[in-house]
Length: 289
Image (cartoon, rainbow, N blue to C red; front, side, top):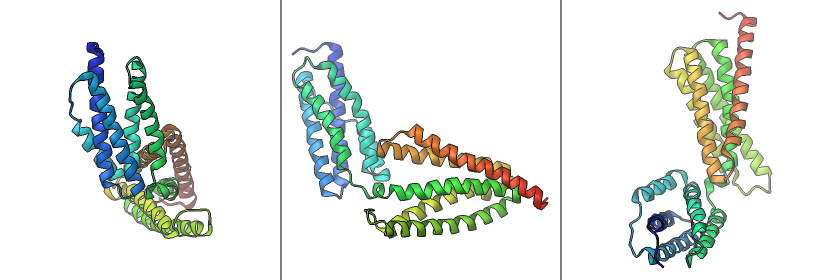
């Protein structure tokens, strides 16, 4: 069947997208240790190649993959995990699913649309990644550190009014709180028979998430002598941590970024504001100059 110039240009673009996707899935399969996940990724690689060949029957042209995209998703997977990379890849494939529905008058395109819809459900169901199994522990450590620590540092800022002293006090408080949270998560996971997690690993994930947040929030008070400047930068750091984590979580889990980000930001900053006021009141009552 002859294609119009516009349809031919579109088909060549989709063809390149299918070839690029097959390269991405092949790379992800090569680094996947879970045999079940690897097999599914390999099968989907073959299906993407099949789509490429279907489109080539209409265009009569070979096209090369977009290697920049291939490398981009490979490194995303290496750093943030296969789940995150696959979900990001699938979000870009939604465009091709929609586009294919416009060409149902062409033979074989309808089958491609069905395949593309099956891909997404299959990929979502195939993932078994440790970092996501312990995401609840990370959320616990991160959320508690943000809520508790932004509040504590805001309170210390007015009560102590000395960046070195705030950093020292915050470090002691943060390390103690991280150990406390880790031990609580260990006991909680161990006592919950329904939990499919190892208590020690759950505790480690919680403790590390807490400590990383503590270090990031204390850093401004080490780097800047002006406590108000340090406080503003600390709050900005907290906002960046909340945004970064919730973006990762929303992509990996398929949940709303805006809802989670708003809830976490409002909670953390409300506690920080309240603690700032309490610190000021206590400073007046104690009479610290």
